[in-house]
Image 1 (cartoon, rainbow, N blue to C red):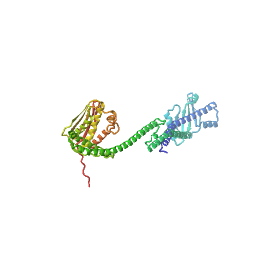
Image 2: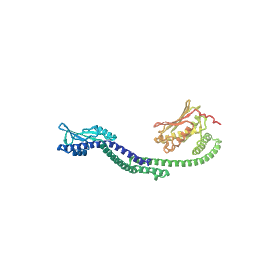
Image 3: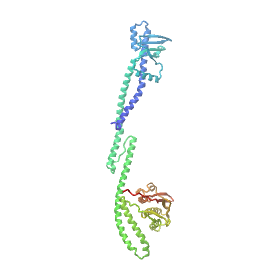
Image 4: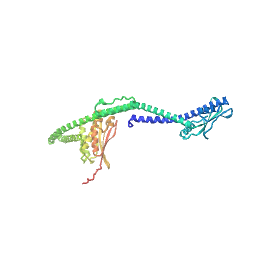
Length: 466
């Protein structure tokens, strides 16, 4: 029970109520002591007035008056004359004097605590003002023991009443917490459990209904999380199905392209100059398509082949990419330029670098052609002591906001209208496989630039121990 929310509220309520009663108890006992002493002074004054009315009062009656007043003697000051009105034998010396004419709150509390902590029965003197202007001063002598007994009895009653109040308050709060907090929280937990059993079932979404603002916000946040998670699960299933379909298509397409590759061998022996000029490019394109299908099949198995690092002239790969995209552009007013030194040799996988550059240039071409305006695409390459830098820039309209927000994330919004973003995601993954980085250099109304950085350093691992 103590580990539950309502149980802890119950215990804390009892503790806090008892603490509050303790703070009330101390001044309450001090007030009780003050009233007790003032009552003794009033009774003593009444007894002394009886004596003043009849000077020949019998000793037996005087003792009875003092017993009723609970004092040993009474001193009354009237008309600047101090006289002993009533008296009886005092069992001991007066040990303390208390002036009740105008005591401070701290003095009352201090004196009350000293009475409660006292273990003997001393004789005390109490001074006060007579009631109804019955004189200038009244002074009595009495025992402290009866006062302490009365204070202890009063304090015990206060503590018992406090305990009853704290228990009742705690029980009421316990049931209130059960209704307003524990029950809604259990409902949230129950919804989470039901949702976990079948996350795809939209009927299991929680409907916020709590009356407490904080709990309602928690329910709303849970519903939002459930909707997002269910959407992500559906997207994951669709991607899995799409991957399976792409793998099947790539498998069949690879077989078709392999057959087409065999047919191109015969085209290469043609004597037609145009065929001789275009046949190598057709062979290269079909070969790359076959490799792409094989890589797609490997990607579907999460087995993207690591790059085969060789040294090659970057200018040749750039020329192949530009020739291919120039054919795709046709008669459109689009110019291609390159700023790559003919002797610039890089160490990378030529096929993967071709795929990266092809994706970047294709995206740039499609973005420019979508505007219906003329444009230019440029490929620039340079090298430093530590790395090679390849930049693909265009004069297109720039990337849309969604593409910038989900850059290099597949199926999260492509750079062109209707695009999936898969090309940039694959390009970035291929560059990371070389230990490099592909990043957006700039994008705006004047165009877009992507920069690819490939490190020159080679990582050598020591041979494993036998």
